[in-house]
Length: 443
Length: 153
Image: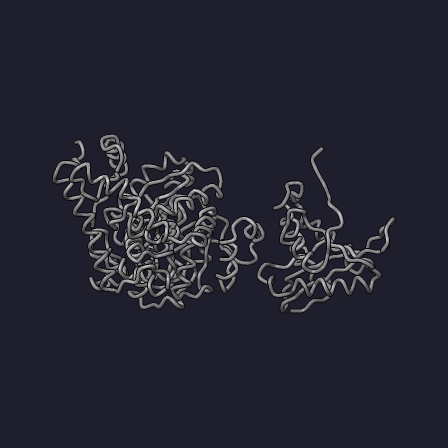
């Protein structure tokens, strides 16, 4: 299990290293410059022929330029990590980190682009204006419920994949871990009673994805800061006007119309996914002990889970996962988003559909299963490199099946393309380090 | 689902729905801030409605559960013809029972009852900013008659 540096030490190093390196990613050439004459090919006058070809067929921009492998990592800085609305400049180091992970684990050229915008409309207009230059969009750290509307509208209006990692990424990786936890406890998704504690980006998306994957909406209970969502909650009309996503969840979930709080929801529940806020005592042993036998609980808050694994086990929970690497079963978006985009970009996908995410989750779960799942290993770890191209290939194949791929690769071609691009990215890193272009960090 | 005249045993549930209407109105304008004892006031308000010849209190009931309410009263239009209006003061359906044509049925039933009571036109009031409610009435052939303007003095 990889060690996680204590927060204080990580912070100290992050400040020192960030100053030393002056940024985490860069734009580097990928064509040879043998002499200045080559610029007449890469630039004017030769490049005009390429421009004319693309003018005639804009999809050629995916073949003749780096668009096919470029993703914009966009935020308005309105909800960055646990820091709140710290603005676009404050968000830049986070977006750079995301871009680095995209590159290293997925071979994706990701460009950090925090934007100074004053409204949801401006954010949407900004992202849409980027479309000709990029193959995909990763939305990041946008406050809820704005993030739902931004994602829905951009997905509907753009012809490239738009992904909000806080929604689809977290939901997808949660689903993967849940598949194996259910397997270990002898359950099927259909019929499992699932409580989603917290109704922010991750759990709102998780509810949708769980239902698409086969869960019965009536067996799901979602809890927000005011209690269990149900159609007769006092503020239901407010939700209709202010947060239609939660309103719809209230309408379709919780078939038994249970009202109250966490304890009422957990009575007789099989699985809990908490994405509700910092622990370690946000969930009490007395609340969780009323779950069914062989209970499953995921505590997603970082850095402090809603409940510590030892306390959950003591209260009778059999399988526990968290967002942290120093406990078993780290449910980490980084297992998913690089591979999702690798697969989507390789087939020049026009969007990322929910079935593509579900297939990715199944492959992640399947990979762990091949290695041998146990209550301390329900999901692969980030060091298991071979999982990324495998998940990417499944995503690519799902895109072809869903009819959203511009380029129809076979399963074998998808896998090979993903392996080649990811390996190339790692090779570049090794080469740059070996040659002293990327220096070792200061002591 | 049954639509019928409210009975005394319905009133506690109906009062809850009336308070919901008022809270919903508050979503559209702070001048509709709901008083803290709204439920007690609703109880009294409904008590004075029940059994009055110039007032109508319809409920929609699913099994034993009251899921919708429509309250209306006859009002005299002193200077206008038609002279008698059936004025819908409150109309609310629990969210779970919306989108099932229940609202339409309640309006039709209320219109018929109010006509029998002497109403020559049917009028309903909703907050100006409540576009969903505005669309509901317009879709059923109502048109805007008055704009009500308000501000703090």
